[in-house]
Length: 190
Image (tube, rainbow, N blue to C red):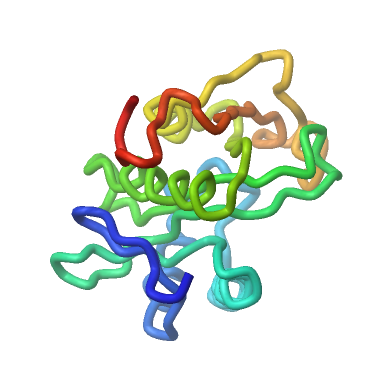
């Protein structure tokens, strides 16, 4: 992927240096980071952005920076990421998102995630894409449901990279198989 993915309102693209400051701001927002271990410092956020950019440069896909096409404003990231075999369902490819709080409630996560799913199924030829989040993150779960992903509660798990028993360690797992309810070619529901 060289030019990124474009939806009616968004562009998913490689990271730029001017994304780092607004990314650090959203990563330090306690409400945005409520379902993660902790907020990130500026240094930690920059390191994460560097890893995101490096993943895209190496694979051609990953956690893409997302900007609004009407303003060029950076609003967060959405994309795909490899999941290792330390997870009970790994190896796999995960879809995920993290947007600035001011951008919530506009359907941006769903819109961008649909583009990422299309890329994963059509371009990468994946048979399945997973998503997971802490059990209390109902906003993200609603996006997963809107994407046509399904959950089997028997597959809920403790995140292997988080302290056992921590308030965000228990996670739900959602799956979407190629040919599921989402129609990648149409970019909409089938």
